[in-house]
Image 1: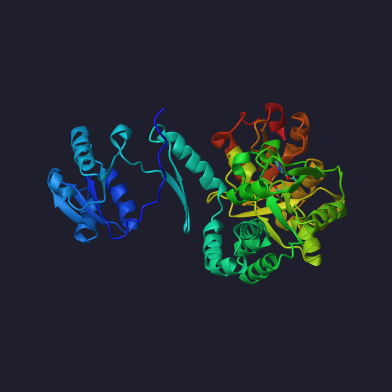
Image 2 (image 1 turned 90 degrees about the horizontal axis):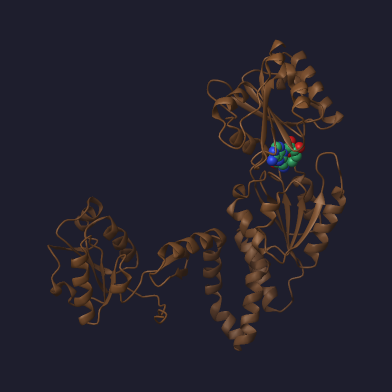
Length: 472
Ligand code: SAH
C-alpha cells in the first residue's frame, strides 16, 4: 500500500510554472494555472489556436521548440502535457532531479504531485483525489458534490469571513466559538442570506452571538415534480438534504422521498384527487407547529407548488404567523406529461397558446370560460379531470371545438408505469373508460396531442383509438 498523498493548496500567484505541451490538454492546464495567477511558461514547438492567441496577448511566455532542461530554471512546478510519453518522462525526471514538483497528465507513477478534481464556491474549494488511481471515481464524486453543495455557500463563506475578527474578539475560546459558528451555519442567518435578505441575516447573526437560540425554523415549499426523481431541481434536492421534517403529499413519488436526509421525519399529509386524509387547516397547523419548534420544514408537493397546489394558501398561513419561507418550483404535470408523451405543448403549426385548467368539481366546471377554452389552435391541459370527461366533451363541443380534435390522457406521467391514451374529443369519455384510465392522469387536448403517435419516446407506446370508435 503506497502512502497517502499530502493534500495542499498552492499559492501560485506570481510564481514561475512550466507547462510542456501545446495541445488542447495543455490549454486546459494553462487556463487553470493562469486563473491561479501563475507566471506561466509554455514550452512547445507548436501551439493550438487558443493557446497561440493567449501567447500573442502576452498571457504567458511561449518557449518555442522541444523540451530542454534549461526551461526548468527557476520553476516551482512543472506540468508535462505532451502526447509523447518519452518527452513527458524526460520532463518528469529532470524536474525530480532538481526537486521541482512535477505532474505528468494521465501518468500517475511519474507524478510527484496530482491535480485533484475540484469544486468551487467563492473562496471555498473542495479538492478530490484518488491518488491518480481512479480519476473517474474522483470525477463522479465531484459531480455528486457539485449537485448537493449550494451555490450560496460561497456568499456565506465570504460573509462569515468578514465577521471572523468580530467573532474571535467576542469568543476567544475556540470550542465556544465553534458552537456559535455551527449555530449560524445551520440556522436562519444562512437561510436569510440565501434569500438575499441581508438585514434578516444580520439580525439572526446577532441573535446567535447573543446566544438567544433561534426560536423559529423555516418552511420550504418544494415542488417534487411529477414522479421521475431526475426532474427534481437541484435546489429542491439541497433543501431536502437539510430537512428535519418533510410534510408530503401522496402524489410525491417514493423515489423523490428517498433523496431526503435519512433521519428526517416524514409525514404524509394529503390527499389524492377525491380523498382528503388531512384537511388543509391541519397541514397549515403542522407546518407552523414544526417551524415554531425550530425545525427546517419541507412542504413537498407533487409537480409545482403554485400550479393547482394550494401553495398560495399555505404561504398566506405562514405569512400570518411570521414564519420565514422559500419556494422551490417544480416541473408541473403539464410540462412533464407533454415532454414524456412526446407532445410539444405549443407548436408553430398547431398551437400558439396554452391553457392550464382544473375541472374536478361542479364549481370549477361552472366558472370556466368555455368559449375561450373551446378555441382552436390552442392546447388545453386539464388537471384532475378523470371524472368529468363527459361534461367536458359536451361543453367544449357546444362551444365550437371540433369533435375530431385529438386528445391524450397521460396516466402516471414520467413514471415507469406511464400510459398514454390517444383519441379524439368525440370519444373522450368512452376511450378513458375503455382503457380504465386512473388518477393521477392529465388530459391534453388540442392539435398537438396527435403528435404523440410519432414523437413518443418514453415507456409503452401510446394506446390509439380502435377502428370502431373512428366512426364518431
Ligand atoms: N401541483 C401539481 C398538480 C396537483 S393537482 C402539478 O403542478 O403537477 C393533481 C393533478 O395533477 C392530478 O389529478 C393529475 O391531473 C395531475 N398530475 C400530477 N402528477 C401527474 C402525473 N405524474 N401524471 C399525470 N398527471 C399528473
